[in-house]
Length: 325
Image 1 (cartoon, one colour):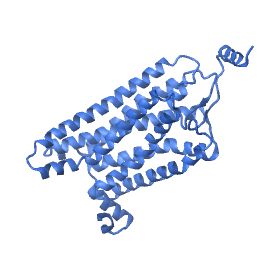
Image 2: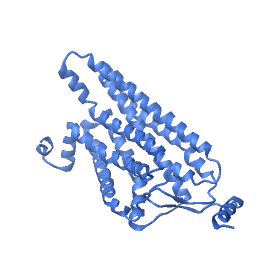
Image 3: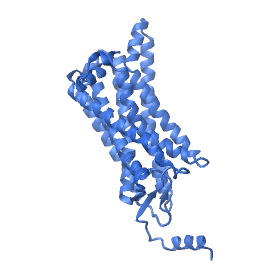
């Protein structure tokens, strides 16, 4: 009897067998030289940590930045730190120390953390869109509507929503039977990559993954889009070109970031569907989608927000004219 047939029959007959660990092989097709990518990825990770920590410290330190818009930015910075830290230490360990083995509980925990932080980032962008909508469309009501209490309630709601709705993803993955292969062609534990190794039916896993994407990602994206349609409609009614420019400048940073965030999610989703021909593309895009936004977000806000630049100057002890050039 051929060996592969015997192995298949053995795996089928021993349905009670469960693998004890998964093996993360890294980037498909370039295992031999993938370690060369560790340097730019490590630099992006350090940039994300340093820049977001600087934002959190600056907003906490500067009293004039204790406003809802900057408080939400501080929450976004914390989420970005958590998202990048969820995967980057493991990826660097794979590239530098060949630490490819990961236990099942650790793998399921990483799946949960990635889903939780990604949906949390989407939720924060929605809160920031609502903040800009009220500020531009209803400026007289803004001080009474968007307050510190509003920020706390919105953040608590988003945390509870994302923590509770993403729990079934790793729970359903943990309920599958992994009795055969345990090698994952990825740098991290992704839900499709892990459940694809299961020996039993994964229809419920795929259904909930899709439902979660539509319920959270789809609703957030739709509400952000509606908010900005209303913002643009209100802005275009202004009589002064200067007033239009000033109004749009207050939300330009946020608009850039949400456009990049949702565009990359769509691109990664399309790449996942078309990734069989060149499997490295969806894997690499998935990694970059998690590490680039945390590094990009602080730079966009720092370049386009004068108050934040001045706050950086005070925290770092630099001269003001360095930031105003």
